[in-house]
Image 1 (cartoon, rainbow, N blue to C red):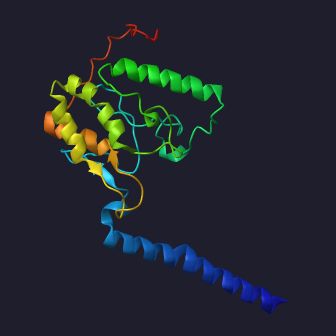
Image 2: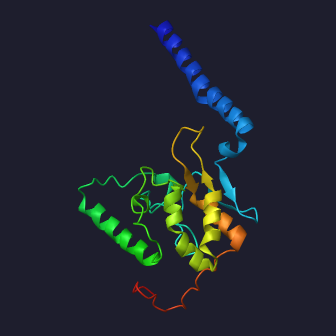
Image 3: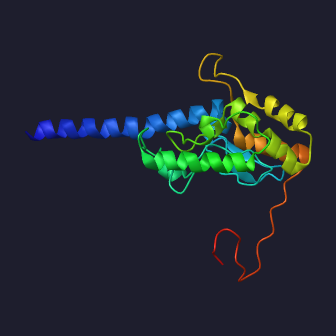
Length: 211
């Protein structure tokens, strides 16, 4: 009995060392050599060298001069520690109300957009962290972005087309645009969009009722 337990314990220790220590270290080492950028989280830096996000994780953009990503149901939104979809089915009234509200907002913010609102701009992804849009969903926002930046729509459209990524290995997935990389490209070419001034202390922000 004791000899059997000793053998089992040895097997357990060897398995733990191999699969829990040596294998992860080996894979991490190989990844850092062959794919150093991806192994470090695909971090994205601005022109000052500051990390502004990851190319793998979406983040919210609300200013008119930037392209907006898909909505997110991950935590409070785009929370990598709480990745999830909304889990709302097609018969959910909550989903219908949210989609209707998002559609109304987008139409109000994009009065010059001619086509219907792309479905992906009003629906969340399964992870809530999707950093990409389809080229059509990005192009739909071009008139708003161009107007906010005071440049011709054709110039903004050219930036979008330059950042369209093809299918992985030529066959996997669909063409897509990384929203963070696209917005950084806009800042490099046209300059940053100034943030709206904060209201004075004690003032009420219009439309919120909050101080």
